Length: 466
Image 1 (cartoon, rainbow, N blue to C red):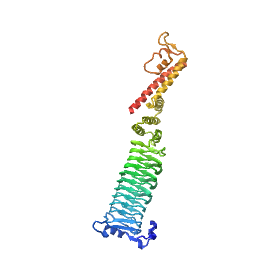
Image 2 (cartoon, helix red, strand yellow):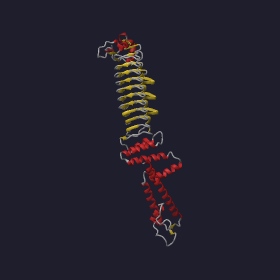
Image 3 (cartoon, helix red, strand yellow):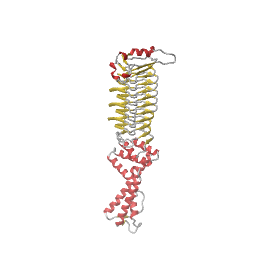
Image 4 (spheres, one colour):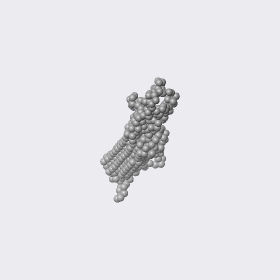
């Protein structure tokens, strides 16, 4: 119905189209419900291009016998297709002041490509055997819900690539998607609220919000499941006043956050991943990690880089993220990195303790690295032995019982002071007339006990957690 002279006319200007391009909605309805000529084995098509549809196209609990293709049409009122059974249906390139198509059954694709819809698109409870096609669509319902696909079932995929734009929330609560949710390059605008809310969505393969995806508002994937992957690679998500990405209890094979720009926090608590793809640099967004489990980290980054994610957790000290990261390093044979993570855990925990516990923690850290660096005790023992030997060699002790006992040996005497259990026969055989030297002997005895206690406590701590 549309000629070449008007082929590029904006759909929003359809109110001025004349009678030659006007079709009443009742006529379209009549054709869909059996008014079209049919032949056995064929499915007729109602196909309009560039028409102005007046009145309300209403198919409530009706069964269409035709494929419906309304391309580049202008609708006076929002179509209402509640509970209808439809064949392949398309509104490609059309302008609509809203669309109510909830609880419908579509035996094929639902085509909304390049549509302009001002008002809510209601797809709640719909079942689409093929795909929901949103490429190039513009949905606008500022401050409200632009598309409500709650409890929707899509046999193939939801495709919102190639310039898809939405002003208002995209809501996909408990939706079921057979293959993929593809939103690469899509722009969602709902600042201060949820730009994409897909709580408990189940997707057979992947959720792709990368490669130019931009959300001004939060992306919510709480309790979502994606069989293969969830990707935010190259995405921009802006919700600086709260959680930019809420993916608590997310279950997927791979989570990709590489090159993502996120303003706000990322919540991954209690998620289950096989592989977590980390940003190559320090993530600017704090990440909630308590309860998150994963099998591998990609790429293999220095341990300090991975630790920065854990130490910046907005929830403060939580033991589980450290244990998970250490277990991941142990699984690939990087035991030194695992020990570094567990040592960082003890240091972070120390900041939460009472003053006496912090003092004891500092002592364990300095002497044996909480048991993860036992060689520190050897360094302390060597240093104290050298100090004692040098001082005692320069001084002149007196025997407790003249003429009895072994000759004085500065090295053996120092070791006898440092070893708290047993004896080498020197400690009780000699004393010092000089108070400073005698006080050094007492200090070495105390240091020996402290070192021994710290070593036992640190090693016991490690063994109890192994």
